[in-house]
Amino acid sequence: DQQVKQNSPSLSVQEGRISILNCDYTNSMFDYFLWYKKYPAEGPTFLISISSIKDKNEDGRFTVFLNKSAKHLSLHIVPSQPGDSAVYFCAASGVAGGTSYGKLTFGQGTILTVHP
Amino acid sequence: DAMVIQNPRYQVTQFGKPVTLSCSQTLNHNVMYWYQQKSSQAPKLLFHYYDKDFNNEADTPDNFQSRRPNTSFCFLDIRSPGLGDAAMYLCATSKGRTNEKLFFGSGTQLSVL
Image (cartoon, rainbow over all chains, first blue to last red; front, side):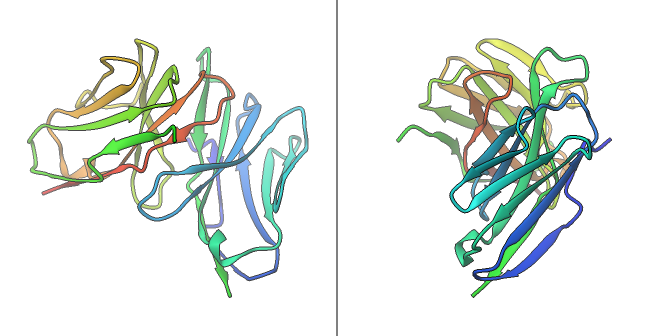
């Protein structure tokens, strides 16, 4: 049962344009969401997060939007740069499944390629 | 710089031969995690330590064990690796367990021959 889904395995964008990465979740107990970026042969690095009490969080070129009613979040990168080319994972956390703590559940990732 | 360090970066083992992967952290975080990631899949949590308290995921095979001798170090032991255990193993840390961002090491790529 995949509770966090990234339905687009890959995305290709021209440098300077907007990149939009999407993520859907099924568990309504999730209340904290994160995006991670991963380069080949490296571990994921934290990019941006959002709490369920907000619907938008911005950090420089990166903005995360949360639509709780649709159980959907998206990451916008504007403007996209070739150095942004990486795998992007969304992750969700919340007290669910009988646990007393917020285990982080990851999506499968989306490969972003930004062309010069 | 404070960080999470995994050794080795690449590990080759033989089918059935025990192998140990190591992780150390200088962040002084309470929680240490081990994730398994296979190609094109989501990282999958195997288990975590909250201080000395070990928490196993229900679907983690018995073949996988872990030790945390102190705050800084955590080990992943695979008792009898099978071909299906070939994967990237990621160690991560966090201050607490709820609504915290995780800090990851660079991972160990395990091959089983």
